[in-house]
Amino acid sequence: MKIKFSQKILNAGGEIVKNLSVETRRQSQTEYAIGAESALIFDRGNARVFAAFEIERAHASEADAAAFAATHAHELSLMSPATLAFDAESPRKTIEFEDAALAKLRVDADAASTNARYEFAARYPKDAQ
Image 1 (tube, one colour):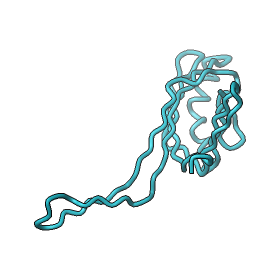
Image 2 (image 1 turned 90 degrees about the vertical axis):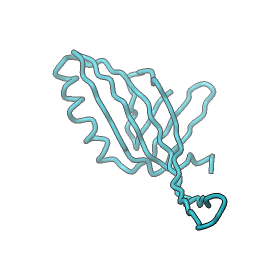
Image 3 (image 1 turned 120 degrees about the vertical axis):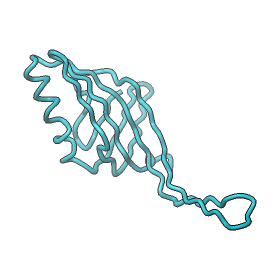
């Protein structure tokens, strides 16, 4: 599976995507009426999808891994918002999340490798609406 954010392929070196999870969060409002048996729950209609995953990369040197860790989040934040696309190769299927923004990124560098944990906030996928 290839993951693309804007025009950048996040796992261009063929890295395997690990721990992929997709979560929907909705804002709701609770009203407690005096004397009512139960509360009223109102859906605010502003659901967001959060897609999280990890990519482990090998780098040419420890310095390259450290530079990647220090600059990768800033590079992606300059692209936000953009389309986040998951492209499965077999069977051929692409799922696109529009208006995706990098919500959280943690990059750990260990010698000449990095492990990046991404979390993007986005709208529902195009074909799920």
